[in-house]
Image (cartoon, rainbow, N blue to C red; front, side, top):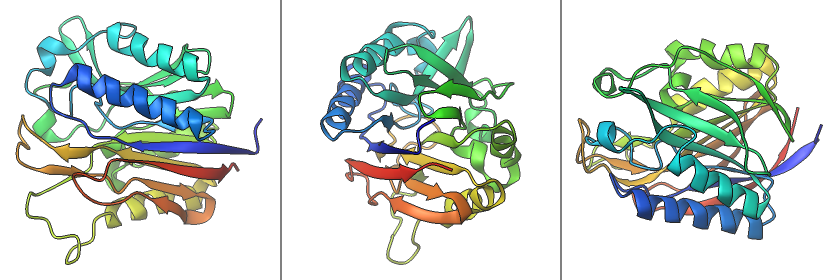
Length: 258
């Protein structure tokens, strides 16, 4: 197993319902991650349509399907592993999902978000399972955004118990439109939650959020603000992304694995 990897944290702009533009940005991040010698790129939650986008029920694709195939081809061409949050349709159900893609462009694992906010339950069906799977990094797992709330942290603890060395978390971290970062700095909840997990289990945890305004759904008018977070074993903050609805950036981290 690898002792260290270079991780790209793709804090990308996601526009509600703008499937083609969002996928183009995701592919651009994959290509930039390759140029910067990343082994792994982690992208945000629901990067295809945006979190809780009102028309997701009609626009969501199956996995495998058009969206996942575009991302898989991007990973294959660039020769890096990719974690991507996507909106998944299965029959008449819609899931807030994530996929882990190999360097060869194959889907190694899939996770469906379990801890849904109440405002998202009319749209998404909660997932019902957890899994740890082998990648070139070794055993890894995924947990999406609110799966890592303090009250649901046993989900990630279970992944650590199952042997995951690294847990990747596509996120959509949002605040009110008038939020003032200078008065109320964002991120204490996640630093506390990630810190508890990594101290207990000597695992690495990386959460990557999108940026941009939420244009549809119950949180319309709020803004996603990045602040992506990587934490290593023993609760050490390794890096944090910039704050702001326009703070699109590829953050690159050289990560020593436990």
